[in-house]
Length: 95
Length: 410
Image 1 (cartoon, rainbow over the protein chains, first blue to last red):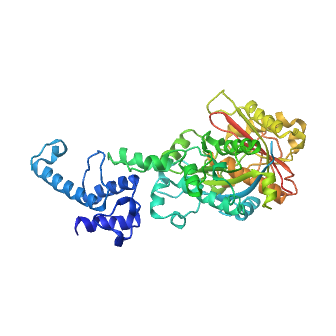
Image 2 (cartoon, rainbow over the protein chains, first blue to last red):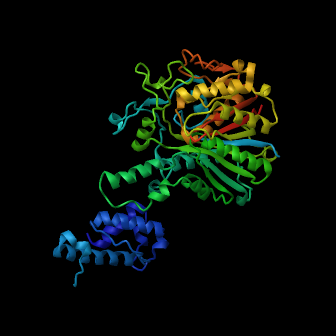
Image 3 (cartoon, one colour):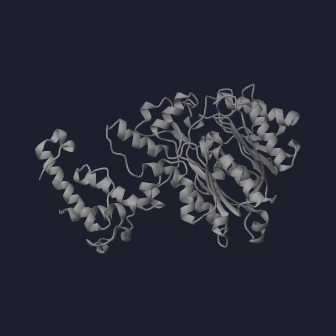
């Protein structure tokens, strides 16, 4: 499954979102995901994708933003783990 | 000051969910106290509770279930039932003039317990982003307001075991003075999480199990009482000016005619007979009645060693020679101690008792403590004995004593 498919499955299961209403440009607030919902979604994404997401304010407005952000984090954290799993969070990595 | 009518009742209790079911259980003395069954059973000295049969999925969608702690779920469902029972009290009102006034002692303790478990037991640094919103004390009142678009005052009272007695009493002041036109008031509690149960156990306030009959373990005013049993649930009432209730031809469950509130300010946990008596006197004074006019009492009656003696002494102090002939009911023997919701469920039971003219029994009272020498309506309901004016007592750790004066709708 792609990142998109997995996040769609989460939105359907946890937020009862109609998958037909999802598009990359679709705004999260239009499918009932407010700031609290986004926080919940990201929390669940950490579990689903075995990621540790940075604790910083995010500007994720659309479904496409979320998918892109998760793919970026997967790529970044895969690289980190390859370099040094023990200190991955604190390591500056040049791609 | 306007007269204040109770025109809606909504319940989510260990005794059941409808007023009829709850009142019939109370009359029959059917105890909802059972051995607690759960992963933590083996870690409890006396695993007894009075739990609510409740399926959240019947009332809330998956997002709400995640966001609403059990205490809030109880409160919201009880409020829905009270509003439905009122026969349209909200229909034509300005929602800015409608308030929510709720009591809870421990609020979303189960959610907090679970969140802390992940921190300490699982050594995780991740906490659900909803935890604060689940655990905060005003969550239940807030959700009642949100669901019904009630934009007047929205207040939560947390005075331990008198929380909902205080909430209902404070509403009396506001409705009687015209500060609000309608109030959703009562209490909710869902304290049956391991951390909470162990904390209550550590205080040595919980009853030891009656081996022969676990459901009879809470024995208010008995010589062999050993403490209280934790319960959960919610009770909500709707209060509005009597004239408004009569004008819309509402069913009137009873009238709230007085409220006494005092504070012991002497000991954080030990009850004060003087403080309790002062609250009863203040309640009578606010109602403009004398002690001679009180027909019966719903006692705080926890079944703890300290409370029952102090409350007996307080009642004697207020009622003098008449104290021994006033029917006193302690219903915690069958629904457990609902802590912050106790005052509300007992207020409802008092109203129902007067409406049906039946003094409710104090169950499991075989032999009174020599220091508890009142007429406790032992074990069998007493038809015709509730009368037309009742007190409902709620006392608390922290010393907050709340007494409601209720009048029959008959």
